[in-house]
Every structure is written in structure tokens, then in C-alpha cells.
Length: 336
Image (cartoon, rainbow, N blue to C red; front, side):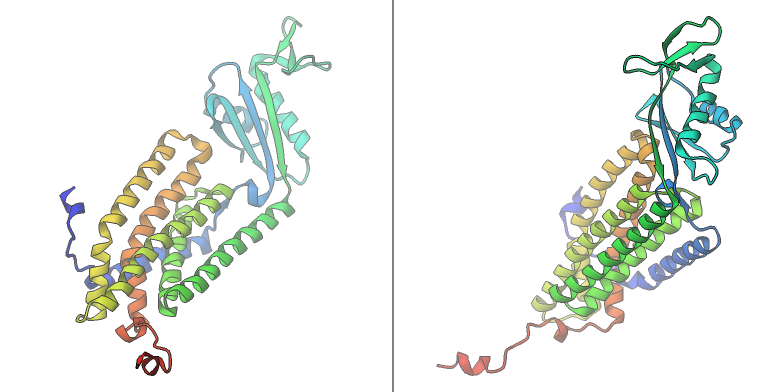
């Protein structure tokens, strides 16, 4: 903790070329993977059917997956939802069957081991089934909680709107930072954000992880988190340009990064603790969301130090660019 209480003197910007090479390699790998493999979109984007079922007792997801595969749904995604008694089944869109037919076939397959059939005249809140052996009726061992269907057209619309949301966010950031700081800082901030998004999306492509609406929401959150880190550093850079009489832009930026380093590390550490908790005990339903946040926070912290400032340097920032603009006639007005 002593390191966080004192101001370090690390020459970060001397490593900017190496950091640039590392980032370029990661981005190229991600882009190649996106071009060759693409993203494994969830039903939010591709369309499909979602079925939530509940068991009386704990059930293995693998056994549920085998039953559904035997029913002809080999591409179904099966995962726990909340507890080990609740199962969520996701299936791609079918051009032959609608959601009702798909869900009916799934429920028949899941109830097969219990030798029960859905009653034709159910009573009460719970679904009633008839035993194939005794003919007695009672609450089904497997209860269908809900069925949702996302059409391919809706999926395409969500894909388009998700991409536009990210584009508008970057454009708004570019305008704001240009007004708040200087256009070189705006381009540097957007370059860092694009860097973060490409690497995060590339990780999902390379690992074949499902890309769903929660993942898109996590990426938008990463954009905000990374921008916050970058703005804090930029604000200190601007302040140092005006306070430090001597020093090159590289030296001034190094001082700014070191001055804000403890804040950056503390913020990232506390955020990562929460994200890791979600990833470990949050369950499969938010696994993609937590994974995107984990990668994004790590990459965002890295880019605020090694990408944003070097990008501003490449654009040729100088002390004169950061000095307040004097209004014409200000000196004459100041005379008695």
C-alpha cells in the first residue's frame, strides 16, 4: 500500500512503441477472427426461442442437454437460471416450427424420464400431469415457467440498433472531449475506446463466446469506464501543461500518468473485485456480461495509460495548444 500513497516515477511513455505493437497484434488477431469465424450471436440478435423450466429436485444441465439433443435440438444452449433446479433453454430460430411447437416438443422430451404427460384439463397454478404408469394426476415434475420468441427480423433490428448505439456513443464522446479539452485529446480518447472495443469483441470471437444483448450493454459500460479513466489523466495533463514551466510533452504526460496512477489502480481493483464476484458466483446467465466487463476493465485501464496519451503525442500536441486563448484587446482593457 505504500506504493499507492506516494507518487511513483515510472517512464510509461518510453514503452509506448512496445505497447503499440502489443495492441496492434491483439487487434489484428481479433479482426482476423471476426472475419473468419465471426461472432457467436445469441437469440437476441439471430432470433430464436427461449424456454424456462423448473424441476422439483436438483438436475444436471448435461442430462437436460442430452434429452433435448435426442429430441432433435442438437444446437440448443442449456444453462442454469438462478438455482440448480431452474433451467434455461435457448434455441435458434426455426423456419418450420413456431415457438409453441418447439416448446411443446421440448417439454415432452424433458418429461419422458418421469413418465408423465401434460393433463388436458389442468387445475391450479401449477401444470398438472398424468402418470403413464398409474394414471394418477398431480403437479408435473417439470414445470414450464415461460416461453419467449424473438423473430429474425427483430434480431436484425436489435443488431442494427446496437451498432448505432455504439457509434453514437463514440461520436458524442468525440464532440464532448473536443469541446472540453482539445481536438487532439478527443481523437486520442476515441482511439483508446475503439482499441478497447475491438480487443473485447475480438476476445469473444476468438474464444467463441456467445454475444448477446447483455454483452453489448457491458461493452457500452466499458466505453464509459475507459473514458472516465482517460478523462482523469487528460485533465491532469492539461493542468501540468499550464503549471510546469519546463519539460517536454512526453515528460509532462509521464508526470500526469504517475500522479493519477494510484487512483487508476484503486478504481480498477475495486471494480474488478465486483466483476470477479459476478463471474464466479453469478451463474451462467450473466457469465457473458461479467466476462465482457472483466476484459474491458483490464484493457481500459491499460489503454488510458499506454494508448490515449501516445495517440495525442502522435498528433503533435504542444504547450501552446493548452494555454488559455487571450481575447483581443484584453491587455488594453486591463490598463488603467
